[in-house]
Length: 565
Image (cartoon, rainbow, N blue to C red; front, side, top):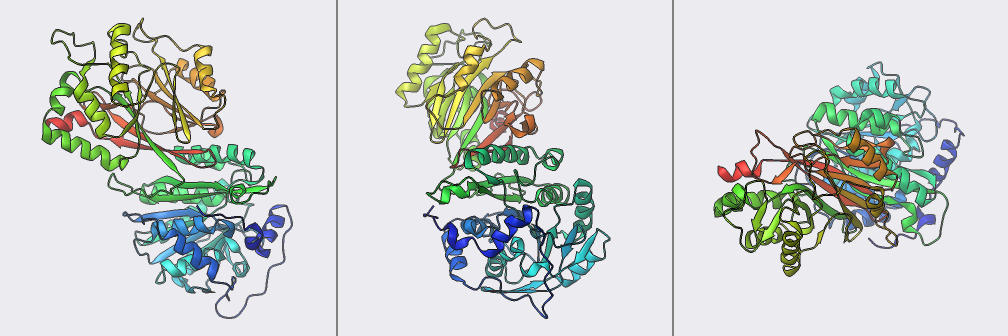
């Protein structure tokens, strides 16, 4: 990302006035001009520059149903990124959800039937849709506040450039509105939302805090967005979490109910990152994409963002070995996995012992796998970390464990065991095992001393706990796992990623008001159990420059069944 030490240049009168408005000072409503709203920003160069910078990022290859972008032009590169991501497809209608910064609407929501002139062209109003919204009875008024509402105005040049044929429905949401109001408003908007509609949420996130505090609130918001919980979103604080909680709520609700889509945050930055001068009041920004996002999704990412994938129980022995020795089946499985990860780094939970030669007489409950097969697959899938903190890594005792680590070392593959850390660019992963349900004498239960390994002295990276725990074939935590998760939270982990139960969690959880993101179990990855008995998922974890993370849960097919087809 190029240098952005240009705070003064972009702190326009509109942004400064917005800060005063949130501090409690309302401004008199302006008189309505005739015709279109005139140009608000008069210099096209900054918009052209931001759009040109974002052009190097590939647009989404799947049609997006919504995006969330900032409206502070200090983060113009992120606004441009969001619209660039959506630019691969056309839309007839764009609904903009923005805060009423200046507290000018007398009702809870405002819109306008006027069009807008911008430095990059005219943006037309969808007058029929606007009229329908005004007639809906959703406590919405026609207002002239949009002639200086930068929550809408800052986005219009990007719309003019990328979607010149689209018509807009601009909405300003009062900070007086509450959840019940948002629900009614979402119901009024729903008839306007179809397959040719893009919902653009104009939201800046954490406000008025130093970066270290803003990062904490950003992480809570990111975790709650990942969980998809509307209840938790409704409880976010305005403006510590976001300057328009209502816009975020309505976006998430409409995306779920109208499209069945989930969010993907591709950027999270803070204004402090753009300036060498320390400031005690910052603003945070996110870019969120909404869409069906199938495994073929090209998943565009900023160069500054590290993306890792975590997968669950993996074993290249027993019946899985026979399945993977079929070249056609192996190619199908590898292609499917790499389509999902795009070849980005993968961390797996390796169940069992790697041996140069696996004895034919070994019993079926002792998990062992041939070295050549295991190593070739770990490399083929670009595995960046092999987790050995589990109840099968010691199936052949210390000597078997030593054989496993020897084989991994010889292949240049990194591994981590009980209480040990895998240091990746931007992220530390600590392996932990707590198997109290199968009577294993080979795996220690977690103790306070082992949990303290999550406290990474000398590292500024966020920490992910990769935990082997729980009961087989149960995808929800017991009281013990809930207690351990809270113990990990108190040691400031960013994410808790579980394995062992052979069945996958169906959703992500934001624990303790969003302090920690948890996927209780990833289930199976490459393991010789069919879909009748097991399931699997993969966690995509993005690590942002400021030290926050965002997770996305990706359900997996049963690769063992796939191999047998």
